[in-house]
Length: 205
Ligand code: TYD
Image (cartoon, protein in one colour):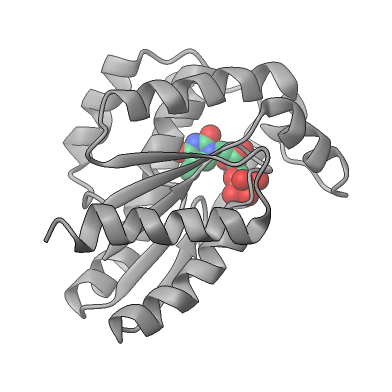
């Protein structure tokens, strides 16, 4: 199974992805890897640093940099895991590119979809979007010590990205689930994620 966890910065992806990977391994009896983008491949950390500090490049350059990162991640991590029958939990994937580069950085959605689809990256079995209010997300980010160039653009970016996540999900309900997390404790969000997988994946098989 290939599950992607999406959401704006500060939405709690890492915490939930870690818990989900542990649960999925025992639920399926299969080794489960927990990975992320950008940079979740051997040698990817320096690529990630360059990507997040690339300055004011144009929207197409930015999109192509994220796809270059994904290409290495797919070839070195995701595809080998699929071939060897492992489950994959991945923080961020194609939907991040659509939400951030189109919602945040004004690339056209049709154009971005065309370019991404030409890459022929493997399709996830499910994309789970952790939807939280941009205000809550920004207050969480501010309480962290470091911030990258996307996070530093703040509330208006988060609002647009959040809107695009919902737009993308509403056009593809079979492959996307949105969990509204604002008033949910960590355990409740995790229960909602497990329920979603049980219903949408196992019961439909
Ligand atoms: P990351 O630090 O993993 O975000 P988080 O704070 O949620 O842990 O990701 C770094 C930034 O990269 C994040 O602000 C979103 C952005 N990003 C894109 O703009 N496009 C993409 O395709 C991906 C994968 C990430």
